[in-house]
Amino acid sequence: LLSQVTQNIISLFRNEINMAREATQIIADQIRILVYRSRGSEMLMIMRSDPYSRLLSLIDDYQSGANSFTSHEDALIEGLRSEIPALMEARAKRLSDEASALPPTHFLVLQLLTSL
Image (cartoon, rainbow, N blue to C red; front, side, top):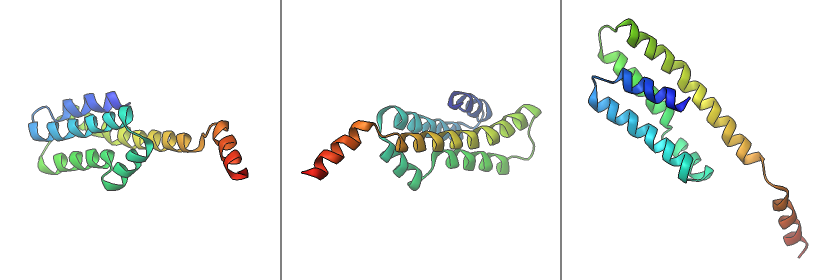
C-alpha cells in the first residue's frame, strides 16, 4: 500500500517539483522509521507531525492551488484520499499488535525480578 501511495504521489506531483520533493521525503522518513527505528520513536514522530496527515495536507494544498484537473489527476487524488487513511489504519493495527504481543519470557523475567 505504501508503494502504491508513493507511485500515485510521484505521478500527481510530476509537474510540482517542490511538492514532489517534500512528499517523497515524508515517505522516505516513514520508511526509515519502519526499517531502523523503534515503535516508540514512531509514536513520537506521529505525535509531533503525522507523516500521513502531512501527505494529505500536501494534497489539499495542491488541490486548492489549481483551477482544474485532468480526469487522471482527479482519479489520483481520490485514490490517495482513500489509500492514505487505509495506511493510517494499517499503522494503528501494527502498532497495537506490536504493543500487545509481549513474549512469555518477559512475564517470566518480571515474575523472577518481583520475587527477588
